[in-house]
Image (cartoon, rainbow, N blue to C red; front, top):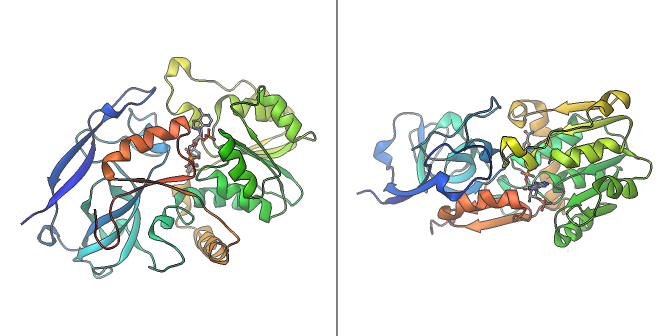
Length: 350
Ligand SMILES: NC(=O)c1ccc[n+]([C@@H]2O[C@H](COP(=O)([O-])OP(=O)(O)OC[C@H]3O[C@@H](n4cnc5c(N)ncnc54)[C@H](OP(=O)(O)O)[C@@H]3O)[C@@H](O)[C@H]2O)c1
């Protein structure tokens, strides 16, 4: 007998611009069973799904980026964490906690053993934190800041979307390595949170008036490193305030992901890259999982988190059927911390 399974699918490819819920359709489908498995597969029950800005781009026709569009009629996928309910793989057993980048937005689904990795089940790191403090955006912060931007103690770093999944980790890593940290966030609560992480100056970019002036006031001597999570107008304001030989970590462009081409903001101050001899670092995190930096990240950040030196704010939405709205919320700043969707409990409660 098969039980029912919720499935969140792409209904249709939507144009670039403001996404709406009608891009998705939610269906009740039959649950896969142990008998549906062929050799080397696992049946996974989803515990948590990761809600990330890049998924918005996957709702539209590919613009040639690193990840393909979702397919109409097929389930949405993202990073996730779940529990193995049945396995024909020699690598995984029933009860294993697993994570991967291609979890389907379904209660239960089948994956190849090559698409998941086992994670330890322990009290220090909750399942949701395999998407949070040890998850993809946190690793992105680690690679972008700790590994590629040549930071030095005493330098000034500016971080946009500083309370978010990536930003909150950049702030803490930079403080721990002796930089002066300036954060920007979109509400007063978020500003207070980023201050509580140790940032030296934090401003609300929505109420500060001129972005150029707000950055100038926070960094009168200029910015050595700008960790760019948002692109657009903020990037132009940061470029205006960079010091000679400064570095920009081009992490993401969220201000432009949900905007129609005719209203997109095109960066104007690119001449400053040359006149101030700036270096721009671009990277896609998926390229770093098989490099030594991944284990360095897991070791350093899990130890810091267990000691209590590193904090990590999760923002949990309950219910798979709420995942589409949870994604759209990111583009209005309605998440506060790393957004995840809880699908089921460890004990199987849905
Ligand atoms: N290079 C990579 O491989 C890689 C990997 C992961 C993430 N990223 C990028 O990193 C960036 C941050 O991702 P995240 O996961 O940490 O997201 P997040 O910060 O947890 O969530 C998105 C936040 O962005 C801010 N935001 C939304 N619309 C904005 C706008 N128009 N202008 C300025 N800020 C806006 C909002 O915060 P406020 O309330 O503060 O505005 C919102 O809460 C994104 O651009 C993402 O694509 C890149």
